[in-house]
Each structure stands twice: as structure tokens, then as C-alpha cells.
Amino acid sequence: MRITSKLNQQVANLWERRVLRYLAIGSWNTFFGTAVLAIIHYLFATSLNTASIFTITAVISNTQAYIVQRKFVWRASGAIHSEYPRFFFISIVNYFAGLGLIVFLVDHEKLPIVPCQLTIAAVLACFTYTAMRLWTFKFRD
Image 1 (tube, rainbow, N blue to C red):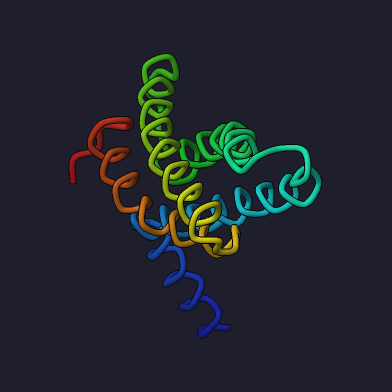
Image 2: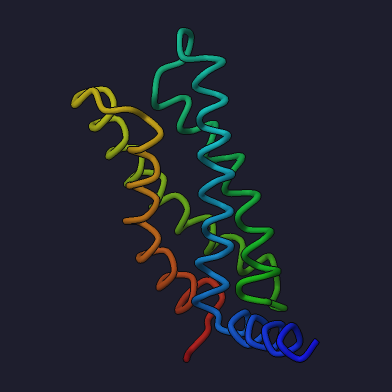
């Protein structure tokens, strides 16, 4: 029993580190967004272009990301009316960066869409964490 209790305490201590929560929740958000992208691509690849598929995915996945990041990563209690516009602005910057990259990689370089999305998400995660910490949720470590 002591080993289990000690392991539980170590996991709880790790969960208290915001950057680890960000990585864990970010992994979920990436999985969720990539799954939505893959499903929409599978269903509508013949009728929608890559930019449209990416845009629909962004709206769905960013709404979900805000909800879980606010609650689990940032544990924010500030006013949603001031946080959400900042979150949305960072999401728009990410959207256009991701859109440009995915259209270039998929449409011009003919690379597969899901690995491209995963790579782009990893690159943009560093920018996003910093912007969220310093501006959206205004944490100073």
C-alpha cells in the first residue's frame, strides 16, 4: 500500500507543475483536433479543400481547447470576457500560421495531412504556451 500511496503523491506533485499540465492537456487537444481533422478530411475531402477542412477543425478544436485549458492547465478564475478574446487572438495567429504551413506541406509538397498537422502543432505549442502564460491568463512564474 505504501508504494501505491507514494506513487499517487508523486503523480499529484507532477500534476501541480503547470508546464506538465499544459503538455498533458495539449496532447489531448492535439489528439482531439487531429481526430476531428482526420474525420472531416475523410468525410469531405472530395467536396472541401484543405483550407476549408482546416478552418472547420480549428473552430471545433479551439473551443474545446479553451474550455479544458482554462479549467485544468491555467486553473483560471479571471473574467471570461477578457480571457477569451486574448485566447481567440492567439488562436487566430496559430490558425494562420498553421493554415499556411499545412496548405504548403499538403497541397504543394504532397505530404500526408495527419503527420503534417502533428508536426505543425508541436512547433506552434511553444509559442502558444508562452503567449497564454504571459498574456491570456497573465501568469508570471
